[in-house]
Image (tube, rainbow, N blue to C red; front, side):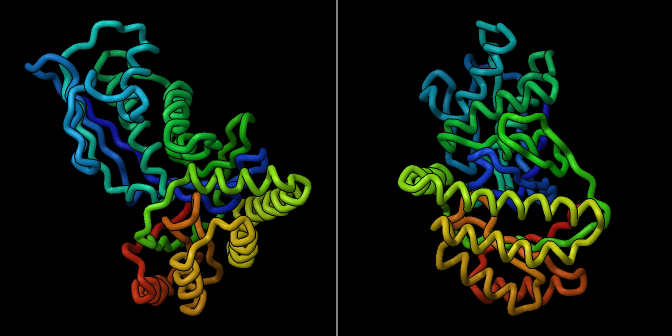
Length: 308
């Protein structure tokens, strides 16, 4: 049996603007993970068992556009293997689907690593990242590439589309609370909605994206200098711009407001928006108060993670 794990992720700053060439900051969330196991089988074909999405099927019966099927095919194609050995691929994940935590990218990364190892040709990170990005196109249409990148390398990432990957140092650890609205949201639809706004008035929205980019730069400097309290107001400012992009939702607004009232230093939606997750920066001694406030405001799940 070959087994691989991949973490979830949160975007700290820069979502949506990152699609238009501005930077974003993202970090792995090790408290939630995707796990893929690849086992030898006595039955012909490659059988996929993914109970989280109610999938139990043989590969050849699945559409090529299904991300799991596409990832498996891409690994065989990359390794120039035309004859499929009998295998069982088991996929389990504790990462909520369609919530902004990178569930699709995490499954892709874990699947690529487990399958390539089972085939005797473990792939380097650069290749894993490239293959996972191709699968992200099926999930999101025009992805930035940030999800697959931070999940592949499992380190804080400063990301600019089509530029070399940069990791960055966290001088002083800080604590983030993640609140799940429980509302599944399509990143593809949210990205498409922002695209329509941009097409209707690109000069204006380029200015908005520039403002997001400046926030990202300030946040990176604050993290690298250990001035983590500065991140709170920057989160609030970034959230205001995401509201303007129309990617927030009533559920997200309730959780963001609840976190701030409970003493969070700042809060914002994280990921595609329209549902999914929000994040809040808290003092270490404030996690119970903020977590309780989020649950009272309707959060389906609350995760506390330390960055750095």
